[in-house]
Length: 85
Picture 1 (cartoon, rainbow, N blue to C red):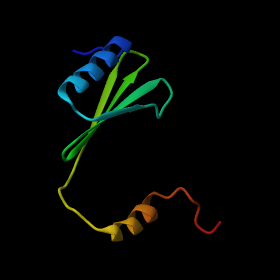
Picture 2: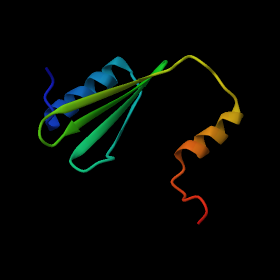
Picture 3: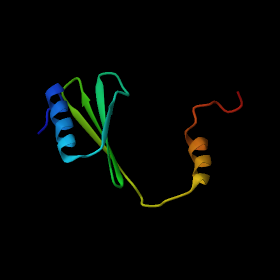
């Protein structure tokens, strides 16, 4: 089992590079480094936390392709802008 420490993170990144799997690294919450892995039909968010744990969340595509009309739904559902202000 991979450890959630820095050596575990660097080992994981090395494995991704060796396998030629596209990824990016960022931090979206305190005490965690996130590796976002993009593969066909899936996005994996792998977080290495400072307590040594690793959290993995997978997002699977439905396979449905839509057009730009979907933007209206995106902004209606997820905008942080306060309505009426």
